[in-house]
Structure formats: structure tokens, C-alpha cells
Image (tube, rainbow, N blue to C red; front, side):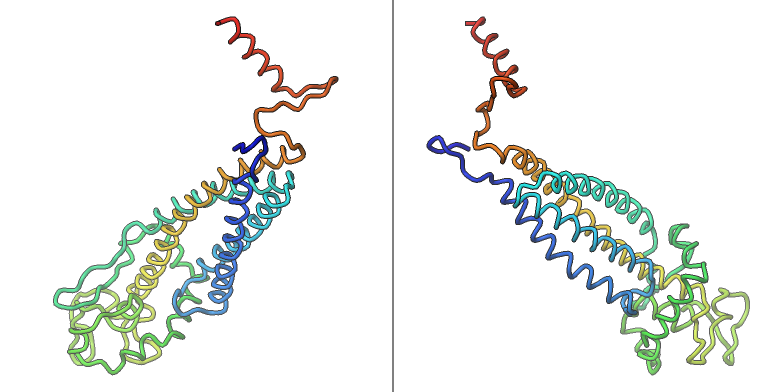
Length: 291
């Protein structure tokens, strides 16, 4: 944009600088949240969410630093690195988002008739999530998280009326009680029933922690968290695409910043003129021939 023969500061450089500053600051709570989860959060009883959160936070931090330095100080190589990293991150996030939506397909539980809570079944979830939770390497720390969260002691004194009036979290529904369909006589299951009915034990340290319904409850919690992250990834993707477009403009401006000549004015030496000078002359000659 030209004013009085002089050019205003290039808006794209200023905008990309502010965008990257905002992204840099936003990466700090993302990294903090990942570290907090790694220390044993009781909100998500699965370690599969901790590592991606930390990686995304640090990658966004480094990319923001490169873009901020490149745009504000006209460092062309930093902007090259920034644009390349943003494009790679866009591709990775796109893949993770598609994978996240595929993993979170299904589930949601089944509403128990006459009760406010839902019950969950392993077969309702994706095969990848089922295989992941069946692996003792992942299930053991997830179960320890459920036990450590004190989810079951919170409802240990509930009466039958409480179960008719209050909702349950997925882990409480699957791990802290037997399936609603179970029938007991003298504390023993009667007839052919769900296998979880036989796994249930009223002992506080056993309950239904070894039930398939408990694994399904944890999978439901993971599914909900992954779905939220996938939606967030879509927002981040749109933001990164906008930043990448501005970064392309900022990179072009960084290459031209060594010259005071505005766009459209050719800087030419007698020995080695700019390449676009020849195109300008070609278009000028053709226009003169037309008129």
C-alpha cells in the first residue's frame, strides 16, 4: 500500500508477529496441562493423552518462536523454518484429527430405563480402543487411576433411591456397581447372566474393577476426552492455515526488506537486472503493440 510515494510498514509482518506471540503464550498452559496430567490427573485415567499434549505444546512453542523472530526481525531463514514447520504441523494435526474422530466413533453408552445414568459395553467402541485397553500395560495404570480417584467411595453409601435419582460418571457406572440387569439371591448371581455379574464382589477393594464394564467406562471417558481434543484440533488447524498464509506474505516481505523499493518498482543494476524486469518489459511491449 503506497502513501505519498512512501510505503507503510507491511501489515503481514506485524500481524504474523502478533499471531505468533499469542500462539507462544497459549502454548505455555498447554505444556503445563500436559505436565499436570503426567503427574497423575484424576480427570483422565489414561496416559495416551499426556504425551500428545506435551508434544503439541512444545512444537507450537518452537514454531511460534521461529515465526515471531522471522517476521519481526526479517530473518528469512527463520521464516523458511517456520513455514516448513507449520506445514508439517498442519499435516500431522490433520492426520491426528481424522484418527481421533475414527477412534471416538461409537460408544456413548446405553441409557438404563428408569435411571439417569448410562451403562457401557466394550463392543460399542472402536477396535483400536478395545485393543489398547485390553493391553495390561495401559489398563493397569488406568485402573490404578480409577481406584485412586476415590470414585467408588463417593457412592458407597448410596441407597437404591439414590441410584434412581442421581447420575453416575462412566467409571462409577462401570467399576463401582454390577450391571443393572444382574439378578442376585443371597448375594450370589442367579442363572445365566452377564459375566460381569459373576465378577462383581461387594468388597471395597474388588467391586467390579475386573469387569468388562469397568474397562468400557474408562474407554468412554477416554472417548469423550479424545473427541474434545479432536474438535480443538479442528480449530487449531483453521488458525494454523491462516497463520501459514500470513507467514507466506511475511516471508516475501522479509526478502524484500533489504530494499526500500516498493512492490512494482524494479531494482535493477546495469549488469544484472531483476528477473521481473524482463517480464515487465514484455508486457509493456505487448500492450504498446495492441494500441
